[in-house]
Image (cartoon, rainbow, N blue to C red):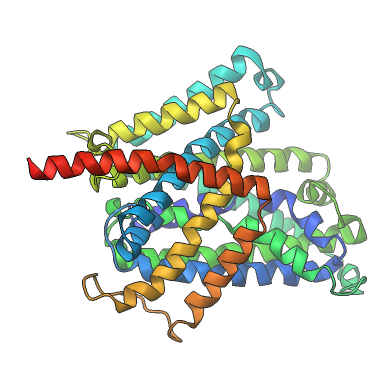
Length: 422
């Protein structure tokens, strides 16, 4: 994977449907000042991203947050982070594949149910499987294609929308005061999540120790700028009507582009969802194969294809699980685990940025954060706050999933010990 592939992968991991749906909700009670809330959210998440950049600069292997936690805090903590991320990735990807049929049904209503829906799900998964079995570069090119189209659509909206911005809509700037600012920041934080997935396939990148920090910082800066401009255009074209609007970008596109605007946004959402799926197709199997290579999961899941050098066993496991979730939909409610698991990846990585500086048996960081522990501590506090904001039932599901992994860890640990002694 080249640097361009990595950046495209990160963009696909971060930019989903949130940028289309959140502008109106962020403006509720805050008005034009929501632009500053979007910027503040990006700067806060950037603190966490910087911790991933420093820790990722130390390692060349795949695994991402799983590997960082394992190196810093031992096998059990690393396993739990990887285990939760693996389950969450399969469940969330199943929901994302299902979302493809929902987005496509705007253009082809028949695919919303029945056998056409099943055919689309299986067909999309089969296409991703072919791309990624034949090599990470081919899968990365598919991800890059969706990323380019997605960003081009957003830029087209921004360029044409800027021509219709009315400066008068920004006054008064905070019509109801600043009381809703904190809530809007927290709301928009979720639109920035997903950047951590780009570090998972580090073992198949060119010079990952150098590429990961640059990719993380480039992606977060670019996405923050794009989100701020989109929010500005939404405010400038819709004015007071923006507040609370559930699909603000679609409404703004209709103002900017007329009746074709709705279809334009619908196409943008479809491409955006396909892009997130293309990223999941790369990341999910690499997380599993990295754990298998370390002996945390059965080593058969780490087997690579003799010709294409791709983790074919992990690909079949993850793709099969995600397809089953998408077809049945019976586990869709468990996707809430993905939210908790994501924050459980953030906190250990932020803590690892501090812990690894004190260890002599790890590779040196090629990207070192300034200010000593200040940035990692602030990022760790933010990760904890975000985790605690999850609904209690979501935390319970996360704990159940974590405890469910303990027998797997114990059984695999004994197998590895027996394997070593023999």
